[in-house]
Image (spheres, rainbow, N blue to C red):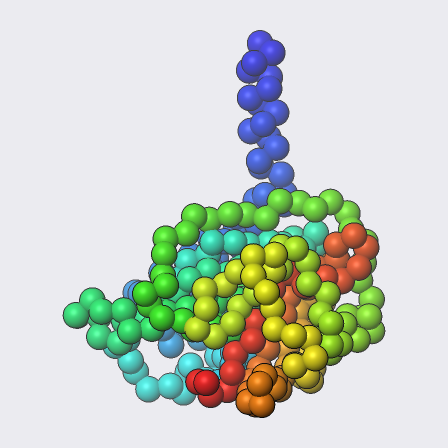
Length: 262
């Protein structure tokens, strides 16, 4: 009886409101990808982007309008989530994972690949839709199978301050966390502790927009950046996802996408 009781407790522990909400978020991402395969990538974006949802082309533009106006394409774009996290409000979260593009699905050749980073919000009808999406590309040779991992609850961490968030967004030394996901063009994403990150003084950020979850414990910022390394200049756009950890805003995802291939 004790063994059965322990099993029951373990089962109930994986079916909390947070667990259910987080799984519904991951399932919304899978549904988005399935729609891309069944209806085409442009229609899938039209159906799954929020009315004011943003994509980058290369600057931030309305995703629905961009894809609604795009010419028909036979290209096949698919992806899946490998990591997801959710605000304590349970109506705001983000997903990330690998994507692949087949320009001509008939020959089965992968012509494009990378990792996406998407922030989702629940709408008034209870459905999840994408608020902002940014992909970063690398060689298809770097693709590998990944298992899905849902973020564990970090408990009550308090609320973050908007002005503090905006100040940290542009500061030279970014508040990386040991588990920050770092996305850079041409590279497979890595955790902050797994590799060195570019010198702080080399990047200048300009915030163009932001949003904070209703619980004020998760946020995103986006904007433009300039980087100078070894005399070479680079301009591009960024998307950062933030979370209140240890009582303060820290980065959980940091994505830089150059406007032109370097």
